[in-house]
Amino acid sequence: MSHPQSRSCKYPPAPLHVPAPTAVTAGRPPEELRLPGGISLLRRRSTHAVALNKAVRANLDHLRPWMEWAAEPPTRAQTAELARAGSLAWEAGTDFMYLVGLDAEPGGVVGALGLHGRIGPGALEIGYWVAARHAGRGIATTTAGALTEAALALPGIARVEIHCDEANGASAAVPRKLGYRLDRVAEAAVRAPAETGRQLIWIREA
Image (cartoon, rainbow, N blue to C red; front, side, top):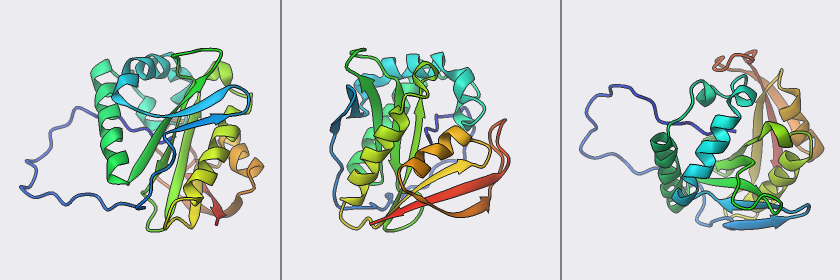
């Protein structure tokens, strides 16, 4: 799942007037989705920062091969800033970030998903990850399926995409099970240790 964290870099001074990001849709997806199997998707908020930080740090070895942002353990402050930025993006209509919870583990985070408006007008990209101890239980498929339908129900959204590295078979199984079609294989920069630089682009259209 695309889930970038802040980095310690020296940037040039920001310009006085920074254009606001363009909303992908005038609508908003549901803030909570209750799904079969005691699974829930909740809009990610700043109040989730501690639980999210704990989940990410516990799964770094699981995530590091495929996720650039998992190279180093995030601090609580970094995760709090991430959550704050996600809330602003939701309000702006550019990205919609969710956490996965289970009825059997109240208050815990067992994964995260996002609808990202980074692939052009009329489309959203779904990113996702699930905790190692819950992998293989269909959680990614169930939650990504629910977000696919939620995305396609939004005004102005006609296409949903899932991108994953060619070597990431577990991630590729999700769009395949959900009826996405493999549109193309694109060359991409290698940003995580297990990546090949060949990215599968899966598409579902309204």
